[in-house]
Image (cartoon, rainbow, N blue to C red; front, side, top):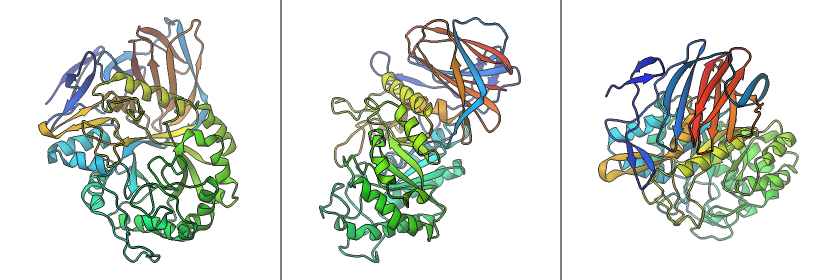
Amino acid sequence: MLAIVLIGWFTFAGANHCIPRKFEKDRIVCVCNSTYCDSTPEMSPDPGSFHWYVSSKAGQRLNLTTGKIGNTKEGSTILTLNPEKRYQTIQGFGGAFTDSAGINIKNLSDASQQKLLETYFSRTGSRYNLGRIPIGVTDFSTRYYSYDDIPNDILLENFNLAPEDTEYKIPLVQKAIELNPELLFLAAAWTAPSWMKTTNKNTLKGNLKEEYFQVFADYLLKFLTEYEKHNIKFWTISTGNEPLAKFVSMGWKSEDIGTFIANNLGPSLAKSQHNKTMILTLDDQKFYLLSSIDEIFENKEVDKFVSGIGFHFYTDIIIPAFVLNRTHKKYPEKFLLMTEACEGFYPWQTQKVLLGDWSRGESYVKKMFDNLNEWTTGWVDWNLALDKDGGPNWVNNFVDASIIVNPETDEFFKQPLYYVIHHFSRFVPRGSVRLELNDNSIIFHSLTYIAFETPQKETVVLIYNKSGSSQKVDIIDERIGIITLDLPGKSLSTIIYQA
């Protein structure tokens, strides 16, 4: 389908627009199927002009306007760019290839599967360049399993990948790589085999026994080796998903994580064929940045093996983002990465999937701005796709997702969550650098904002207007002039121009 779209004073061909479907009041999803899905054409602004993409509660989804850069101040809200003040470099954005995501995607026709993968990984989609791949079972599986269920097999002679890997994860990962060869992968284990743990039961919970620290390190490396046979290499490997929260994963003490890194995983990885794979530690709630991360690094050997610190966003409601600034100051050489986020996880959210709910997208907006303004280098969403119940999940821990699959009609629904991440992932590529953006407004306003310079030397400014009313803003860049915009209420904007 070819659409001709009037954008500002110009006309562009080739833009595919959202096909909206409403669920109660103002809840809107965009519907995709085997033949059609909305997309974002590849276009760069000409010198002296800007592109402005808007998504809003009212139903706009990446609506594009092109305008001319001027030199007259018109707004009472004034944001001034300082391109000389630079902060962190961006690693990227992405999502997780869980068993459940694979099951849901594979429940669609081949053509719809391709459309879904394109909407995440292609050049005209979200351009996801990070993918999180679980090592074995998670709660978003349909059963408990490990790669070696034979008790006391300390040589791991019975290690084998599971059908979930060969049927769901690996084929989809390979297709994603075809769409975006720049994909980098994060590996994370939710549990060791049950015989290595204190519970010795087929459950995600329980602590790893100290006598199996090295065996578990060998187990993780075997996973890397098996995936490399399928031409899938890993950028990072985690020391364990949510080891301190112990909600639906194997538990650790902070000091034991440090010991495991220093004595087992670090040296074993360094001596292996996977010695370019970096270690990401913590991989748990931001709350643990207050003390547990220091306990991990108390072991002086940890520093030489760990490259990054991962965190989740589930306690952001009580833990402010400035703890990331504190962590960066203490460990400036370690990159900070948000490795898991989703909506609908609170116990009081009895309806786990809310199709088209803007407030859940707005929750992501706030946290993405807060975290990226405090040295975070990227954002990895949770399940790439779930069903209308928020599963499957074998421990009944159902949640929402950016894409919800409807196999009965061979469709999938793109949620507001999807478009929020897209505003960042599509226009802030790997290697972009955060720039200082100062507020010189003369009145109180309702805007949240951030700015980047891309490797292509384009400037990208993102602004969220959390007010229900429109807000006029001037973006001042002394190198090129002034961009004046009238931002719709409850809207997320991405503005791009050449500096």
